[in-house]
Amino acid sequence: MLVEKIDTFSGHRDSVYSLERTPDKQHFFSAGGDGLVVRWNLEKPDVGELIAKVPASVYAMCYEEKSKQLWVGQNFEGIHVFDIENKQEVKSIKITSSSIFDIKMYENLAIVCLGDGTVIIMSIQEFAVVKHLKASDKSARCVEINPHKREFAVGYSDFSVKIFDLQDFSLKFVIKAHTNSVFTLKYTPDYRFLVSGSRDAHLKAWNVEKQYSLENDIVAHLFAINHLTFSPDGKFFATCSMDKSIKVWDAETFRLLKVIDRARHAGHGTSVNRLWWSEYENQLVSASDDKKISVWKLS
Image 1 (cartoon, rainbow, N blue to C red):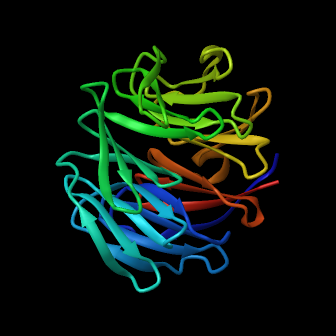
Image 2 (image 1 turned 135 degrees about the vertical axis):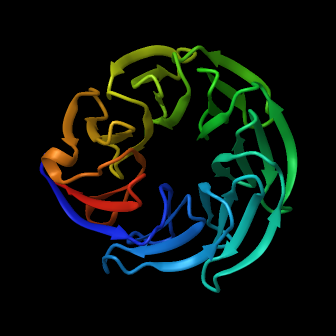
């Protein structure tokens, strides 16, 4: 596998924590500690377009397809929704006074993970809270949805992954997953496995059909795994870490294929917080504590 650094986007004034897709292949959103929400164009490097400015850190964003609006989780304040074309805030709701770590959507539901351990279920259409799920006193850090099983997985700072029913929101499984906070979750594209990454630097695969039994356990990084994402074709996935590196893996065998770091590829100099793998020319985008966003071409 060949790795080429295409470009570095700079403009954020603090750590970049969140990357989110847009309706087209070549644009994406970024946000972070400076409260800036920026839209970037992979075809026009380093030309950032300011969509919104909020007064607190942003760890989570989610693009809502039907309304073409961007949901932004503003820490300590709740959800703010922006019309991305007019760059205007259209509505907001104060659902929490703690951090918002993740937002995912399925049909008419938005699932929001909070720093106080609560998972909030919202109706997208009515923009109202439907349910509070309190399954831990520790932070709910990440959520992933399995539409085939009609369930969703939440990773917590109590080291567990909990599986909930998407219809009645009942708790189905508790996985004693890691020895530290679970920062990232992703179902494989065929939904056979749930992959988890943790502050304990381990990468684990859980067999969905066998009641989430452990299938694979890899010491993948030196420090915390902050995020993981699959390639558009589902053949590969990438992890990023507090150890400043990005690693690319074979999705079938979990074999390590490439290490992207400062020494080898002029990578990030501090913690890599977030990844987004675009369909546009198979480019991988990474966001870091160094306030920069890097773009990588993998072939």
